[in-house]
Image 1 (spheres, rainbow, N blue to C red):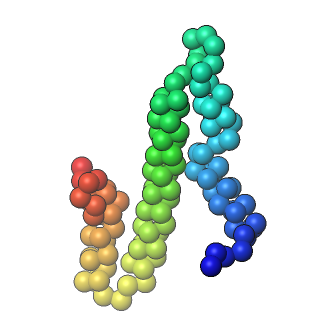
Image 2 (tube, helix red, strand yellow):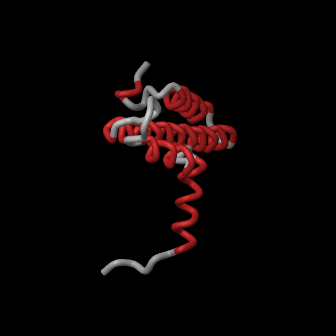
Length: 108
């Protein structure tokens, strides 16, 4: 059974998408460029690629925001840590996450 439509949740999701760069005007420009006359027209395939690129930029921005939130949480935890050992461990973990080395595909 599906859940009832939540308009406020939908609006929040749409606002989040816009904040991440999934801009209406940019998507509209891409869609209107498909098959346009003249030199400014693009193929459907190119339109899909442009929208994918936009989505990937949005994902990258969301990941960066989440990573920053994790770093802030760890820093707050680090500042309240009771032992030097725990502090060193958290400091080490923060450094690894900040450079992206905790994910194999992001290793520098």
